[in-house]
Length: 232
Image (cartoon, rainbow, N blue to C red; front, side, top):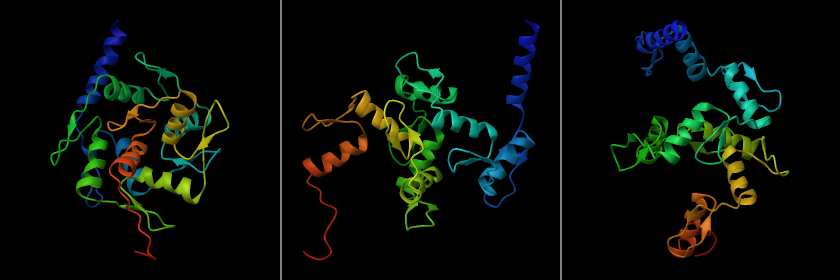
């Protein structure tokens, strides 16, 4: 229809519009196509403004849409976007697409120039470079000496360790978790009994990759990194 063609034309013009609004904060080379995009960037990244606050927990957000997504995912447990290849469901369409690209299509278009690692998202590549190659942990906890490669990891740490928050609740039992990843692991282990990470040495399988690694280090490699300071 003519209306559909007009919408497609308008969308194409927006996508092709040059990024003329540049961030003038020192060391930041980010630019945007609109003033609104630039303002959101400055408010969230440089001014750390989060005016939209959740009434159920201490979380706050830069945009109203992000607050609603948080409420849907964490408090209402709404996941309207379903994968046609497996039973996974998601709160956002973008998360569904990321899942399909990584889990089913095995797409990892972002390659590290320092090692063979590849990633499904550009942010994953940057986090990898910062943590593994640059050993950069710019996000420091104000309550303890811990520091992190990502801001979200610092937030998880604050919520779990210092604030003792567990906003992610299981819809099948009374369990609650400090992070979405822990809730997902709980669901796979307790309710789905999924153990996808298998040890190549003994055949044991585990819910999470980090638990498998701990098993390999302790049982097969006999690593004992924690030494007593009071004896030899």
